[in-house]
Image 1: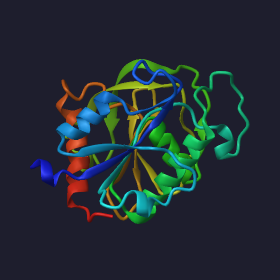
Image 2: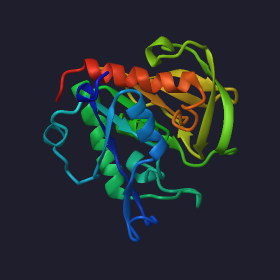
Image 3: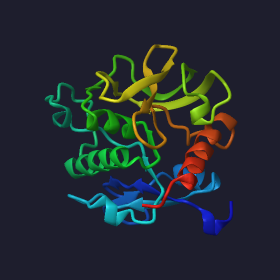
Length: 234
């Protein structure tokens, strides 16, 4: 794929209280995530979370959306009060922007890949709920994930993949249009298909962690970018 043909992939930026480069509040995208998208043939661009965004205007010329990992979704966004002190990184503007972008991508049929928090956002956006704190959190957790269906749609060639996780929450009640397609050895939901006119899938694990050493993880990004390249520009 030539550089001029690279599909533009919108990655919603994450607020950071401070970074060494900015000295103060920052807007960040994980470097490994951006590198994975670029190496797969896409042009990753970080988008500023803004209230009441007109995504048709802001994403004109884009062909894909990636909702990345990040802090926790405010439980009030899915009709609950916080019940644990383990919740961290809540930012209501971040939640509102994520949820609106998830809904927009699904409704417009824009190729969509969500990762970790991003998948939790998709679940909330479609009416689902989250487990606010797992009994055994999956932080720095490596485990095998069994792909139950749609493996080829994700670009995978194996029914089991070794996956890197970093999360203390997980999907609880599934949102409308979501289907479980992969589970961990412990039984947690690790991937979902998302009902949409376009290619749309959500992962609970972080494929960007080991894409440079694991062909299966790299293939997910290649499949996503390939589907974005075939989609019409917004």
